[in-house]
Amino acid sequence: MARDGVRAGPGDRRRGWGWAGWPVNGVGVRSVAGDGVRLGRVAGDGKGRFGGGRSSDRVIVGVVLGVQLAASLGFFAVMSHVVVHLRHDLGLLAGTVGLVLGLRIGLQYALYLPAGVLTDRVGAARTGALACVLRAAGFALLGSASGLPTLLGAAVLLATGGALFHPAAQSLLAGVTARRRAFAGYVATGQAAAVAGPPLGLLVTFSHLALGAAVLWTTAALLFLALRGPTTTASGTAGRGHLRPALRDRAFLRLALVLSPTTLLIEQMATAVPMLGSGRAAVTVYLCVLATVAAMIQPFIARRADRPAILRASMLATASAFALLLVANPLAFLAAACLAGIATGAMQPAVFHSIVRHAPARAVGVHLGLAAFASGALAFTGNLLLGHAFEADAAPAALLALAALALTSAATHRTAPAPRVDSPPLTTPPRPAPARTTQ
Image (cartoon, rainbow, N blue to C red; front, side, top):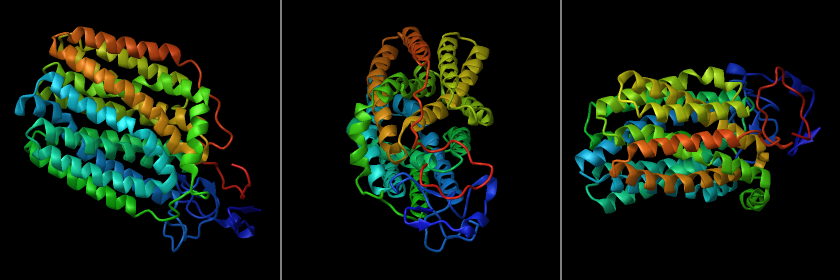
C-alpha cells in the first residue's frame, strides 16, 4: 500500500524500534510541523543515523530536548532575576517594569498566530533556528541595557524569538509517535533547567548572566539546524490554507477562550513574588521549589495530560497558591511554591494536549498560534493592570483577582473538544503496524 509515494512491502515488517520505543526505521517515523505530518518509510540503520531521509523520531526528540535544556537554562537564569535587576539595579518603577515585561509577553503571544502559520509553511527546524538567533540577540541587548528604549528593544527581540520558538519546538513534538511521553520529557527538561538557572544569578553579575544566555540560545539554534528532512508541507501552503478554517472552528475558539488565562497565571506565579518585595535569595528558593515540583509530577501527568480534570486541578492549585502568598509565613510561602509547581507542571501539558488533540495534523502550528494569541492578549492587559496594582500597594487585591481568574477558568473548562480524525496519535503502539492510507 502506498503512502506519500512510498511503497510498503514485506520488508516493512522487519523495521527496528529504538530507545524508549521511538520508531527509528520504517513506517512509524513521521514527518511533522511544516514538513507535512505524514506516515512514510525512512531509510536508516535503526540507530538514528540516516543517510538521506528526514531525522528519526528518536533524533527529533533528542534534539528538541537538547534545545529545551540549553534555551531554558539561559532563559530562567536571566528571567528569574530580571525583575530584581530592573527594580533595584536600574531603579525602575513597578509600572515601568510591568510595561517591559508586558511588552515582551504581549508581543510574543500576539505574534504567535503569524509564527504558527510560518512554522507550518517553512518548517519547524528553520523557524526554531531563527527564533534562537533572535533570542540570543535579545539577551545580549538586555544585559547591556541601561535605559528604557534599549530595554524595550530587547523585549521586542525576546518576544519575536519566543513567538517563533514555541510553535516550532512543540510542533515537532506533536508529530512524534509517543507524543505524551515526548512532551512530558520536554516539560521535565525545562523545569530541570528552571531549577539550575536561578542559582546562577547569585554567582555572577546580571550582564554576564545575560551574555551566557545569549551563548546558550546560539547553541540551541545550531541544534535545530542539525535536523534533516523536508522543510515545507506537501502543498507548500499549509500555513495559509489552515488559518481560515481554524478561525471558523467554533469549538476550538471556545477552547482557546477557556485556555486564555493560562499564560497570565503561569507568568504571575513566577513574577508575583519579586513584585511583592522579596529579595533574590527568597525568589531563588521559590522558583527552585516551583520548578522541582513541576518536574517531579511529570511521570504522573504524562499519561493523563489530555484529561479535562488535569487542567481544572491545575487551575485550583493556581488559585490556592495565590491565596497562600497573602499569608506572611515561611511555611505558607513554601506551600505556595509547591502548589505553583503542581499548577505549572500540570497546566503546560494539559494546554498543549488539549490544543493538539483538536488540531488537524497538518495545522498544529496554526492552532497553537491561535490559542497563544488569545492567551497573550489577556496576558499583556493583565500584566499592565497588575503592575499598577503592585505599585499602588494593592498586592492583596491583585493576588485575589488572579485566584478568581483561575477559579473561573476551572469552572468553565468542563469538556474537551472531540479529537480530529487526522490529529497526531497520543501513544506509541505496542508493535509497528503496516503502512496505512489513513492516519
